[in-house]
Length: 195
Image (cartoon, rainbow, N blue to C red; front, side, top):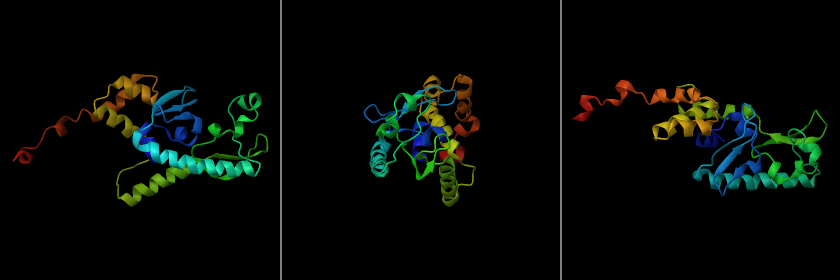
């Protein structure tokens, strides 16, 4: 999940709430539905994550099939989709990419469902990994999104492309990441390093 946050520039909520149908392995892209501002956007699916993500989805599919055998296997569908397509909630494409380990009763209708993994679970894992790695700077899930943008700019991608991938309405928001490119004295090599 952390690799997806960094490799695709996802927000934490976008990662945990992603449905299987939103991943396009052929086009190497992820569609983010109803993101911040209720806008859809498309971002990249890194080549290096295709194989591990496919393997992960094989495990998730087995879990879904077990849920179906037990009479469950449904997810909550947004808006009026549940009424329009009553059986769609059990379809593989609507299942969460990162499902919760437990089933929970939906307070809206009392149906036992498998939701997406809690954001807190990933936040705790990132915090623990940061501590264990010895990194002495504050790192959170959103740090990966910042790094995604910064590294794209450092690698020469234009600001409009990065703006589109991050779904920023205003380019001024994306411009914040350019501060790391203006390294002032950091771009100058010390004379001692030239010896």
